[in-house]
Image 1 (cartoon, rainbow, N blue to C red):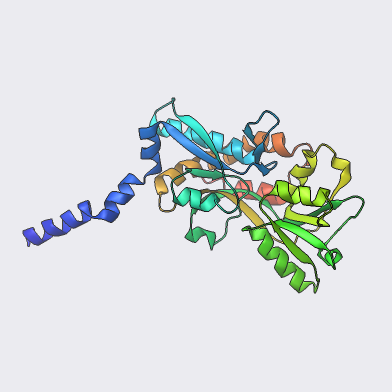
Image 2 (image 1 turned 60 degrees about the vertical axis):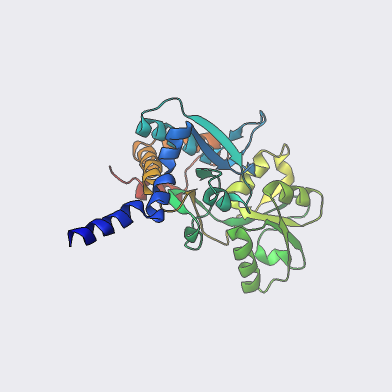
Length: 286
């Protein structure tokens, strides 16, 4: 019996799956390499983008910077370097799975289908899909897209809900997939499409950073619910816990209000009730 027990224990201790889990620990990898890699989208203001100085910036970037501080405290190391790794809508999840980044800091909607690919932190924002058009040719809602072209970034939840919303509204419009928000905005400015669809908060950010905000119209109507969260590798509970602890502390202490104000204060003096509720609900106690 003792021999059988010892044999079973040896299988558990030395099995490839256990060894793989040991090696895949993000915290141990960061401790060993002295580096944490933040994946981000380059043209999704004000969530994550490249600023005028060529540096990654935005609401999600600031949250991830606080998480880096939490990781340093957890490991007891202050000399951890930060590497910013640009990703696209198509590569962001594979970048996590392939160990090219450690956390995804952007405008990523948390869904159950995506949870098959990655794990998510507590929610960081809530918004919904809308439309961006030109003042010279305003498109206020889904029905107004009849006979028109609308750009949307491929491999996003927005392209799925847009098609569903068009179908439900019996609206015949051509959906034009693009690679990035920057490409969608350019297609709109060049007159190749009549509207660009994305999360409303991203559309507002694009307008504010466009250099000519008065040229655009952001639709008031939302046709989806988009709960944002940061993404991490699956089955790495220790690293996810550090991220959740940091987010919860920011929410409980009210420090998140300063971060919100920095990126949304210019066009939203009052924090929407849905976001306030999200902060309260995710203020998980220690």
